[in-house]
Amino acid sequence: MIKVKGISSLQTKLKGLSQAVDRYPLTMLFLFITTVVSAKAINDDAGDYSKFIFTFIIGAFISAVGQHVYERFFTKRSERLLIMGGAVVLTALYFLSVRTTSLFSIEPGTKTAVALFALLIAFIWVPTIKSKIPFNGSFLSAFKAFFTTVLFSTVISAGVSLIIFAIDQLFFSVNYKATIHALNIIYSLFAPIFFLSLTPPYPGKNDANRTHEELALREQMIERSMNCPKTLEILLSYIIIPLTAVYTMILLVYVILNISGDFWTKNLLEPLLVSYAIIVILVYILASSLENRFVHFFRKIFPKILIPIVLFQTLASMLKINEMGVTHGRYYVIMFGIFAIISGIIFSFMKTKKNGLIAPILIIFSAISIIPPIDAFTVSRVNQFHLLEHTLEKNNMLENNRIVPNSTISTEDKLIITKTTSYLDSLNYKDTSDWLPDKLFYYDHFNKTFGFDAVYDNYNRGSNYFANLDWSRNPAINIDGYERMVHLYINSYGGIDAKKNIPLEINGNVYTLTKQPVDNDVRIRLMSNDKELIQFNTKDIVNLIQEMGEENNHSKGHSLTAEEATLIQENEQVKMSILINSAEIYESQYNFDLYIFIKIK
Image 1 (cartoon, rainbow, N blue to C red):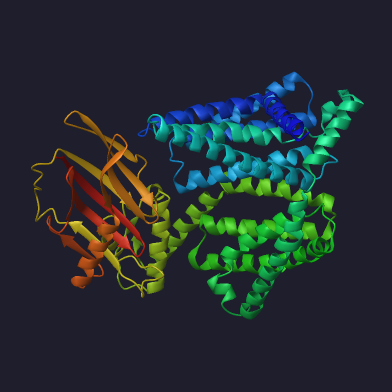
Image 2: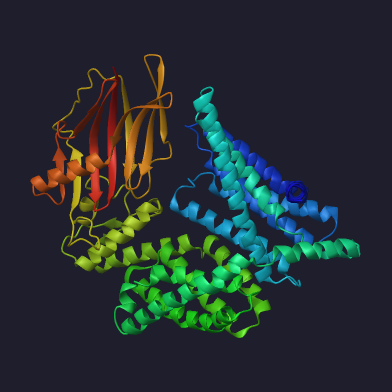
């Protein structure tokens, strides 16, 4: 009986997979192309396929939402094709918007993440529009489907990885990329299809053409998908809600003790604001269908507590803008705070079936934050430019569209100038100004431009180090004996440059110079046939420059001779010399401009 039941369950899941393919055809096409492009990216270490991969992922999300729109409101085949065409057009527009940027930079990466989140909320919300299906139920169904998918995908990926490992160890050598390709298929293709197979066909306009038996079967599927498992009910009622209560008390005590002082200036609660609001909103939605003492108490009290806590902190974040201006991070904190306040009001004073109102509000807020001219990055860019311009003009440092150096201004203004220019530099906005020069944080350009070194919040507690190779004393560098030279630019705050793998051909053999970020360090490795020949860590440069600065009592910048600027790594196979053209270290951040000389022995 157990065996028959297991086979029947497996057949049901396989049938669900085939039905998902038929139900979401355009989504399946996008997922298949994503898998193919990802496979190409795995094989081509030097290529950058991120724009294509994220474009097809966006397309898969848009087409899945479009299918739910069709199921809820339309019936004709022509209408379905029109919605699919719209999904393709929107996907193409996304690609055009990111084609000239790197998705690993802050702005396009953040906007893509927000767009995906908004599409996910739309995917859950659309089936509940003017429907008897509550948003809470659709959310719970998606929540269960997600974790079920994670469980199945993890088990399958672990099993496949072990099988490949066993074959490699016991029979014949298997390329290490085989496991990566297998995981690509599992997570790019199988996992999303499996998730969609667990999404029930919700009530829609086409239900008028279905028989009573079909409608009854659909009702059973929907009810089963929205049923809260006993384990989850226990977890929410007797573990998560009590822990949330303790967390709430801690926040309340902090607010009460600091309401007249540090609360408004230090923003210690700001990182906790988002986590607390997310916890309360998420738990409230998941527990909406439960009926017990703990859940009833939570639904009645906690949304009302959420409102004042989030309100006070949102006001504190707004006041902070007067001090250091708007950044995209603070923009999102304030916007999320407003959303959390609205959610708290809805949860506190409206019936449970109205909880779905938070979904369109969240989608609208997400759209506002990524669509110019009032998106997070346009607003922050304009605000930071105006703050910088105002500070310079106040200190008579901006005349005829030219910055006039001034070392006598206050430390507070130095801090504002440093932070605004650093922010604009990190987002590559500096080129949009006629008077703000390029490469401010390169060599000693900052000091020459403004008349003082960069000043940060920890200025009085730490030291900054600047060093560069003095080419006037070293007009020629001896490269005798080396076979290749590679130029690298590495920084800690923006990651490494896009081309992480550099192919090298030396004496007829192919090598690859790779750059791998690890925590706040970057490892430079020379590889041959997937075997590491030698490795160098940029942490060694940090230590060298800091030691030289401390020994020579330097907290600013100094010049290096060719000998001082050279580090050598050597073993029986390779000799690698690292020549430091320039090095800038700001506490835990750094910029390095390097030349790498390589000799194969």
